[in-house]
Length: 118
Length: 107
Image 1 (cartoon, each protein chain N blue to C red):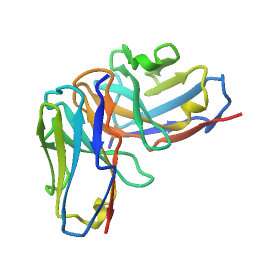
Image 2: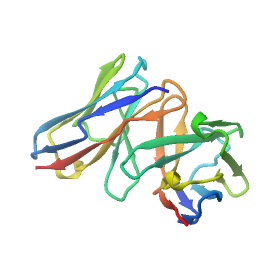
Image 3: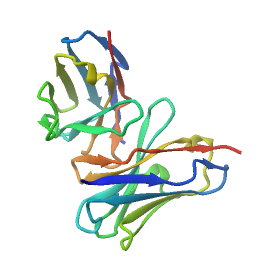
Image 4: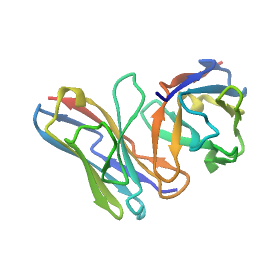
């Protein structure tokens, strides 16, 4: 069974960096698909942040392009989100998900709530 | 970016009732649309992809239809376990974008 699990700090101070890990079990992230980060804001708006492909290439939402980095550790079957210079507007629940390109997200993590506050 | 306008924002339905949720894209998306269900405290679950294809394991009371810019999700016979949030997502063009969600409750 494929499972994704997010982890990381639940509280980040403004202007600092947000760093999250997605641990994947049941599928090797270099075997195929793209591996995405999505966030859901209070009020339920959802935003696709970007992905890292099975080959290691990345694609980011232009709204975040200057602040976001998605990387991976293939030895641990994990991928990571770093979002720089956060503000209170980055407060959201962050999900990692498997993306079948041009189709759908078929596996999601449980989500991790991150609050940006001093 | 392609804007996805979803309606209604909330909906109450009786058990057995048929309900519909709509998504209107700001431009044609060529059936590149998925629907997800999210129950309280849980992760989203894929219901429908390519506008009308039922994901494996999803009950047949769920169906999707539409074309061009207008798409809909139908639940034929509301069940207690269908109480959840539903949202659409277009995969036609990056950045991927989502509808604003519909909260479906039992009346």
